[in-house]
Length: 186
Image (cartoon, rainbow, N blue to C red; front, side, top):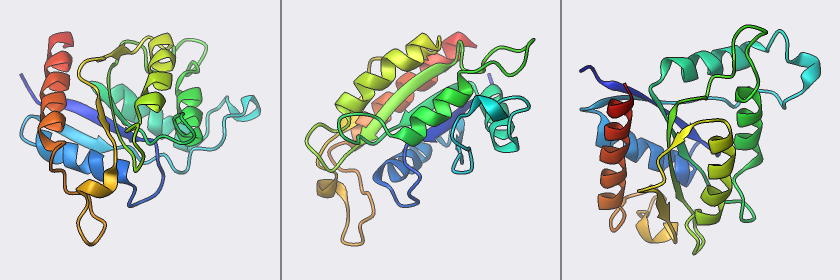
């Protein structure tokens, strides 16, 4: 069996966000068993039915990346006990049919969720809000294990770069479980 293709969706657009760094750490964990790509969606406009058909080029590009993947791994921060608006906007676009003859692109895709936060909840509440939405979109959510990392500053070096210590084994466990889930679906 060939390598599975994982598309990482980071719910923060900030280049050095903890969740982007967590996604890069996940990529390093799965490099030998999976292709792993971080989705760039900063250019996706706010959803607006006035521009839905034909979809903007950025939306078409993102949809093609989703269609080409075997699974979607979400890395979400927590803003005010919820996942970020940029992630919701992306999911709004992806939830819409591509055309009159082609349905939305998320249905049936395996999904994993991770997150890291400076706060004590470790993105648990944001993840709990994300699950019903992606379940409604008929994604196959891997509820166990999910990864919530609190107190991010305890796992960064003096340069502000994430260096997983206590959380590293949990990320490895989640990565193995997600790859297994994807392989069983294929």
